[in-house]
Amino acid sequence: MAESNFERVMREIFHHEGGYVDHPADPGGATNRGVTFAVLQSWRGKPITKQDVKDLTEEEAMDIYRMNYWRPTKCDQLPAGVDLVMMDGSVNSGIGRAPKWIQLAVGVEPDGKIGPMTIAAINDADPIKVIDTALDARLNFLQRLKHWETFGKGWKRRVDSVRQVAKDMAK
Image (cartoon, helix red, strand yellow):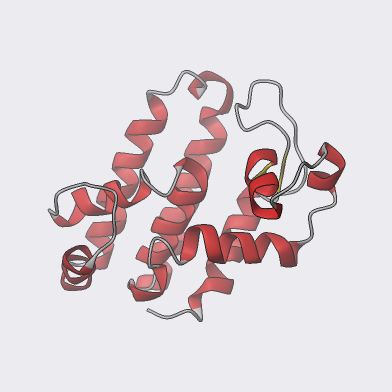
C-alpha cells in the first residue's frame, strides 16, 4: 500500500500494453506502451505526430501513468493487488470507470471518485474479494463492448492475468 508498488504495477501494465500499435478497429488509434495519441498530445500540450507516439520512451510513459492514472485514483493508498486492479482498469477503460468497479466491490456508491469513504471501505475489505468482484464487473463491461469480437480474447487474457498477479500481490 505505497508508491513503491508503482513500478511493479507498471511492469504488469507494460506486459499487456506492449509497444507501438495502430489497429484500425481500435478507437484509441496510434498507441505506444498503452499511451494513446490523444493522451500523449494532451500531456505534451502541443500537436504531435504518430512518429512522436512511436518514439515515446518508457520513462515518459511512466510519468504519464503516475500523474494521469496512479495519483488521481489514489493507488498509493490502496492495498497491494487492489492497486493493480485499479490502475490496470483505469489504463484500459478510464479513471472514471475503474473506480466504480472497485466501489461496487466494497459496497460504496459508485461515483467514480476515490475519496476517504471509498479508501476506508477498500482497506476494511478482503482484498481477494475486492479483486475478484471488481474484475468480474470489468469483464462483464468489456464483453458488452462492440469491439469484443475483435479484441475480446486479448482483453479476457489480460483480465485473467491481472487477477492472478493481483492475488499474488495481495498475499
